[in-house]
Image 1 (spheres, rainbow, N blue to C red):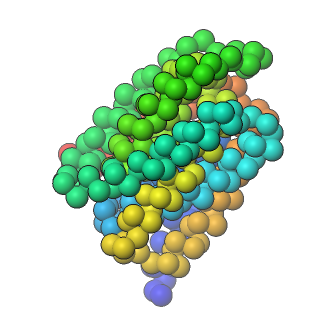
Image 2 (image 1 turned 180 degrees about the vertical axis):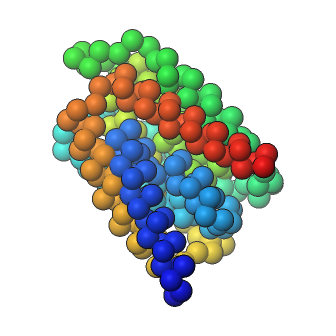
Image 3 (image 1 turned 60 degrees about the horizontal axis):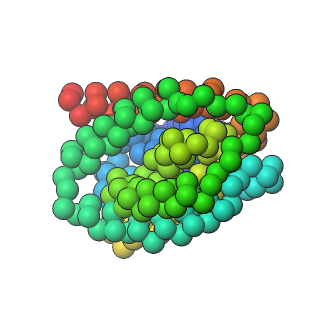
Length: 256
């Protein structure tokens, strides 16, 4: 491998470590952040970036979920059903991808990011000292919404976490509880979508291995930091800022 190739791996690994820390803190897998970052490095979208991002998404989600489960922050009555639903439907979105152009996929991604950023920047009033009462009716609503979210996320190749997190907040969860529960939900759907991509995937397994280790470590540290120190409102607005930055970056590339 040339020096330029080695330097690229080092830079990409450090970036993904830092971004996985943020993803772990807000209870997401790393795909919604990794996708535009890998795009900056010039990798092809459908056969390289999407399977790579989905793999990282599953690994980072597991890292965060383990930490949150140990802290007893996960609503398992919500997490398990939504996990099963999104896992089953995610491959449908991957199948639909063949009918869409790359440019269309990216513009949909930008639009969704901006919409979610607005909703997360101005969330319902949240009090971390009060445990929200989540009813079975709320969980049923979450189940129906997660089905649609799983298909759409599979289509975008980013895993369902970045859509489920604000959806749970809108249903009445605090951002901290939503982040912890969401980290469990997004694990298997990410891998089910990844394996759907695998037959056509084209990437360097060395880079996959190195970036996987960095992403897992970053996500675990981020989850531990959030569990100790971060308030729900701070978490919501941090999530919103990350979404806006990603949307602006991708829109700039699309029009340039």
